[in-house]
Length: 85
Image (tube, rainbow, N blue to C red; front, top):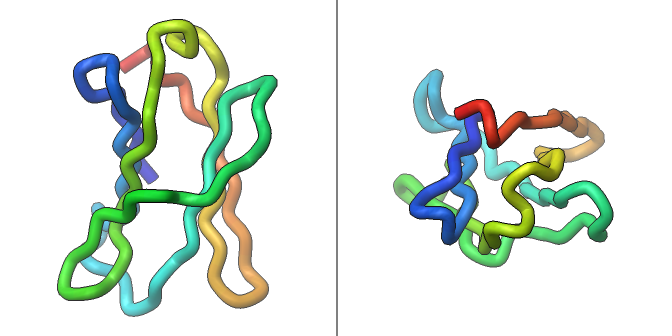
């Protein structure tokens, strides 16, 4: 999972660095002090989810950012340091 801030307008997270996955993961994310929210705008490759784009504000610039990928009974949670990128 790789997440980057694009033009201080949105966060773009992708999970296809090893190629397009064989399954469609469900993605959610949140900044510290906000509720977890599902992806509203998936990035796809041939109908398979490979990433998500979500809004970002300058006020969130130094906040911790968390992501979750889910499929079936498996859940992967990761904390990202967006200000270090």
